[in-house]
Length: 100
Image (cartoon, rainbow, N blue to C red; front, side, top):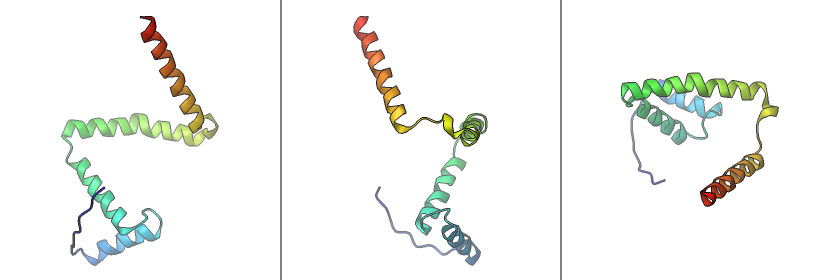
């Protein structure tokens, strides 16, 4: 990813909040914290319905799936299991397309 240098003045309270976020481990660096804030701005610029749909998806699908995974980590697949499943799916599709 290419970067550009930007020098800005921010209120002392904002700087302290960013610095504290890094110290607490929420971000690896001030750069990462600021990049996350900029990414959040892009969500604010989504068209209203697109943002509403995104929020619905997060609340109705992502959060419940995360909660389920947290409650039952034994039900999660390993990376190898996922790779094996995807390979089986590709093979099945390949056989189906050759049989047609």
